[in-house]
Image 1 (cartoon, one colour):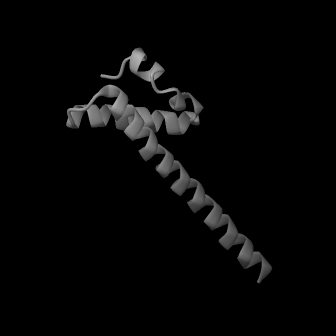
Image 2: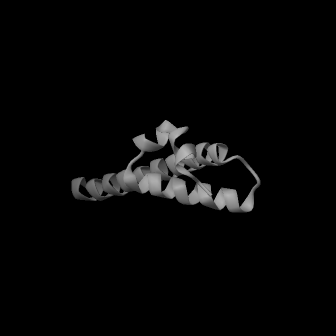
Image 3: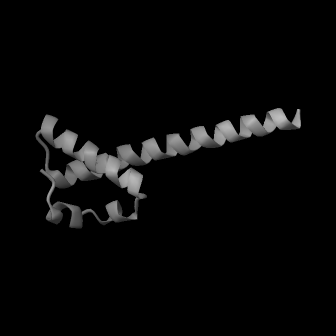
Length: 74
């Protein structure tokens, strides 16, 4: 289980957007339940996974806007 002490040892968690932070915490809990690793390591790994998810999500939205704008120009 992730406790407040573990969260305070990973300050970059507080710099994430609320959606990405929530996703990182869910991933960390999942990592802890399926793998036998330290809570701090689980948090750090989950932050990287959540950041990658956020970047892919933003890139997908930008790509859709660009495609939509291209249709208007043509």
